[in-house]
Length: 343
Image (tube, rainbow, N blue to C red; front, top):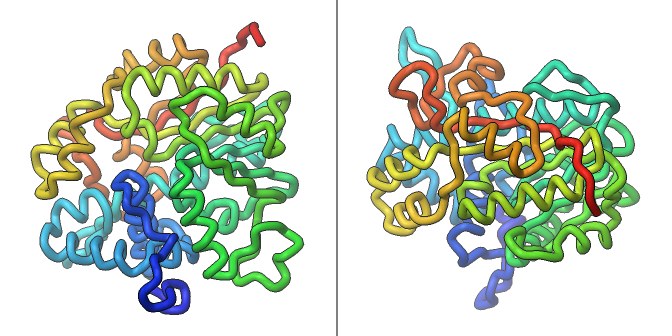
């Protein structure tokens, strides 16, 4: 599936788009999952940039994983063809991609009918936290005037800019006429920053971010890589950087789910990442209180199975499968900034 032109590097040279850090490299694995789903005739999500962002290494890895551990791969990364009389199995990555596509569009269009979105006015500022290889600024049909900001580690931002150049994606709307992938957002700015440290909000403002305007902050597949203290600090930073009317959307994973996945996985680096960091309270009753203490009012919490019913009702999804109805193992949160005072 990978375009050789996209991956071409002079023989013997170091490919600066490669990501040696494991957490950073998972962004390319997720892109590979989106690419695989995009190729399905009844795809839940469409991301024509995904195979370019993924690259051959990630595509090969996901393919090998699917062959060697098909049930686990189907639950986490890719779907499975439907057996006679059964629904096609769709991956959790595809479900969450589609769910948040709709949530972001709802916020930008001022539509309060999806994911608990509450809008008094359409949002025109979207900040993708831990953006990875997210292609939404190019592939979503965003309304006029939406500015996007992507924040991630420096190696991810550097690799992404290289890959965008290779695939012929526009970095500004003035280049859209000649671009293979035009920019759908009015603007898209990238910021290299560690979200666990101080200073990144000021750096974001230097990129053109307007603190006085309502913002949609989106953290997809990010918080589970942070400690409880880091999540709390990030949520407080976001609250203090948000104008009234701002929203926060994110994925959350129950800590028991991560421990279970760590025990099942065959690769040590996955076991270590699943079990070593996440510590924020995740049951629904605790999540609401935790977020309220950080300046956010939870509007809606949607478990993966509910999200799958909303975006892919004709398919089945077993991403972090619940043992019983009501289990919140992997879920999506929508929150509104609480009224606050302070600088």
